[in-house]
Length: 336
Image (cartoon, rainbow, N blue to C red; front, side):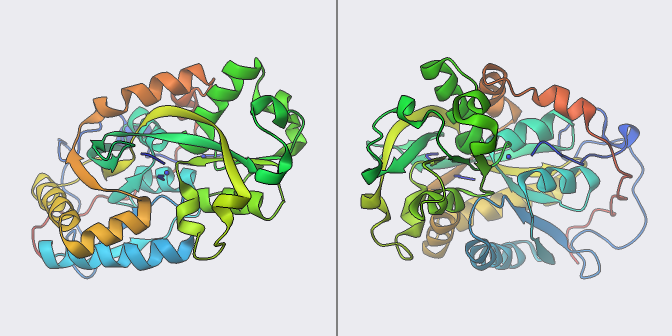
C-alpha cells in the first residue's frame, strides 16, 4: 500500500453485496436496515475482522498486523482477528461481502470501495515529505538497474516491466500516466503485452528488478528501504529514472453499516496507538506511515481523477462486477 510517499491492483474482481444490500450511501454506521440476529460484533464468536492491503511481504503484514490487532483489543475491549488478503481485489470483495469490517486500503481500492458503496474511509495516512513535513500525499517511482544503461522512460521501450497490481495507485495508475504522457503510448503498446508482469506487491516488484527478472519496475517511493536487510546493495544496484504524483495517501476504511459507537472507538484507538513508540515502529514498518488524521470520502477525489486520465474506469468496473450474496451484519455491541 504504501496499497505517501510510497504503499505505500487483475481486474477480475468478484466483490460486493447484493444490490439491495450494498446500494445507497457508504457512510459507516448509518443504516435503516434491521439488526441481524446472531453473535454480537466484537464477541469471541464474532470478532471484528481486520484486513491489510497485501502490498508488503506476508511476514511483514503478519507481524505488524498482529501488533495492531493487540492494540485494538486492549483499547476497545473487543475481540479482533486479522484476515489475510491474497490480492487488492480480494480485499475489496471481502469488505463488500461483509467478511472484513475494518481494512487498511490503497488509494485506488478506496475509490472502488466508494463506487460500490461498500465502505467509508475514516483515517488517512501521513508521511514525511522531502522537507520532513507531514504530508497527505506520496509519489510513485520507476526503477531500472544501474548497470542497464537506461536513463529515462524511452529506454524501457520493448523491455520487461513489473507493475504491482492494477488496483495500485503508485504501482500502476500513476506510472501508467507517466508512461502515456512521456511516450505517447499505453503500457501494453510501449512495453508489449507479453513483457508486462504484475508482481502483487511493491517489494516483489523491486525484487524482480534486482534479480534481473525484469528491466524496470514501478513502486512507491521508496519501497526499496524495506528490502535493504535482504539485499543490502539494492539501492546502488537499482536507480530511479522517473517519478509520478502526488497521490492521496492510503488509509483505513470501515464497512458499510459499521456501528457508530464501535467506529469511534476504532478511530481513537488507531490514532492513539500511532502516537506511541511501539505504534510508530509498527506503522512505519508496515506501510511507512508517520502519522494519521481523520478524513472523509472527498480525500480520494484526486485519485478518481487520475484513474480517469490513466484510462482506469473504476465506476464502470464496479458496475460490471458480479455481486455475491451478502453476509448478514452482526448485532452491534460495545463489549464482547
